[in-house]
Length: 422
Image 1: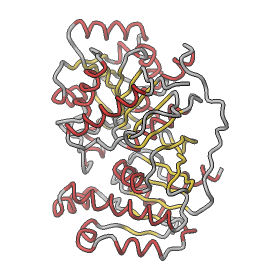
Image 2: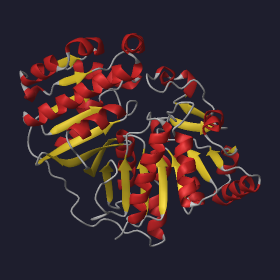
Image 3: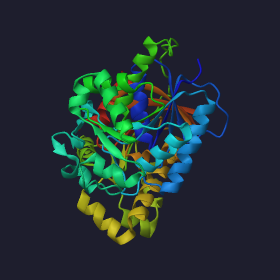
């Protein structure tokens, strides 16, 4: 069956998050790493292209997403999705709004919605304000994100400076009254000239109602959860078929490694929990990497008994992150860590590692690039929005999971390995 739905994600963990939720439908999902250079072939009904453009310059992000859109259209896609983080990670300049406007122009559509809610992971939107658990976004740990600190919880205020057309709200009351009421609200906003509509959602039932009301829009935007109900709608309409092939995934026997670059509050707790098990560990210091390079990290890895599942991490508290950024600059500090973890991933593969647990969006992009992974098959979820994936690298079959910083429980790293063993 040809592609019907094409999604573009602004980072790699977000793409696997989306892929895992869509795969719950039983419809075949294919995830491409970067815009494919070859023409569409062996495409799935649900195709996702993972980019690394969340913090790229606006012009670069727009150009890359437009190239991804062109490929998906050639693959036959008729409905499109712009996926960004459920915490609306962005700078005041973009890239959420500018990319959405560029995609709308290319598709000739006059309105789209913005819904980063993910109730299963504690992300909800009420009266246009985004909450992380019980905290407003601007009071959550996201206020200290090293690349995209979020200092406002109101999505309308965050989005308005990024777009050239009016921004409006379809609030909780419109959503709670059902799909027909929500459609009417969107039509009313359209009549008033409102192009960009933030939609409230506080529960999974809200997501289903929003999907029912908006499934035929050419372009939707949001976090992964708003796309989750779409395949079931299209299955009922006969536009998709379930994937009947053997769902078993294969990877070669071999040890595992954890590579963590995220500095989110949850990843800090996950690293601490994994270290408490006595795992071999190496903490990366951006200042040391700037002065001495990554040779010591690679040498350390080569000396380890990989059966113990080593962890290499740059995860640190916000104060330590800021101190490194002040001395090196934000971009250089992050780039040094990403390059080192990427080099460690390639060295680990060459040493026989066949299971990779990776934490952090930027880190995931660097690692998959280093391993020259261009396509992932989606397997079982470890936690909501975090599946195991299967790929080939240097002629080897490996398993890899790419975890967004704040996703998963404190025991995520150990749980990931247990899920794969089962």
